[in-house]
Amino acid sequence: MLSSALLAITALAGSAAAHYKLLQPTWRGDSFEEPASQWIFPCGNVNETTDMANRTAWPLTGGSVSINGSHSSALTYVNLGLGTNVTNFNISLVENLNQTGAGVFCLKEAGRANLEEGLKAAGYSGFQDERLNGLEASVQVIQLGHSGSALYNCADIVFNSTAQLLADDQCVNGTGVSAQEIGNLEEHATNTSSGATPSTSTGAGSVMKPMVGGSLLAGLLAWGLL
Image (cartoon, rainbow, N blue to C red; front, side, top):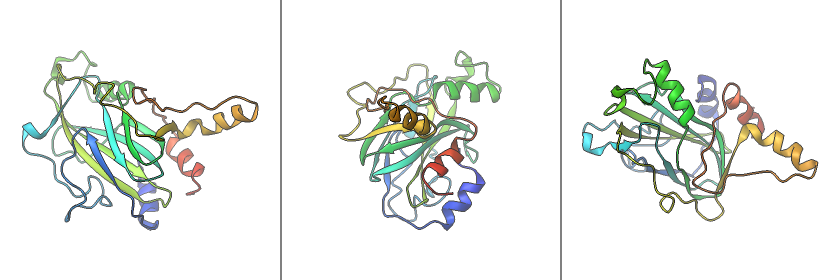
């Protein structure tokens, strides 16, 4: 999750023209149109929906996330906040995911293990807790480009026991689009120097395991932003 230190860094960084569209879950509204702006924390200046019908139904164990980005590369974060009128997106589902290639990028199931941990920290017993069905929440997606500027979009969801992940033919990465955990880059570089081939996630069905702890600092250092 982006820290206050990163917010200060991004505020000082130069702006970039690249933006992205949140496809799944359905974004709150078009953040390309004023008074919305993807530069504005935490949700691009787009208000939370007041209509339950506008909330995307998400499986109790977490749902799919799909974006259409215009960055050639970007660090991607996915956070979640429980309840309504969310101001604290304190469950980090995906951190420091280095997306490369402009176009559609899809995670079939975003941060299942982190979601369960966050639910338990919030007082739920886990995915089997009956209180989860019908629980409202909001998803925050952040992309950080090479300029250091952060772009924000949010989507409102409702956990639903009958909701499904996107099908494989619906969750497909665009041509040349892939992703890798930034925290693994040093390890992959070491393996490559010894003759091994680094692994990347090019299949949209892959479930990325988010990094924890110092992942944000590692990502910024890797990108030369600190």
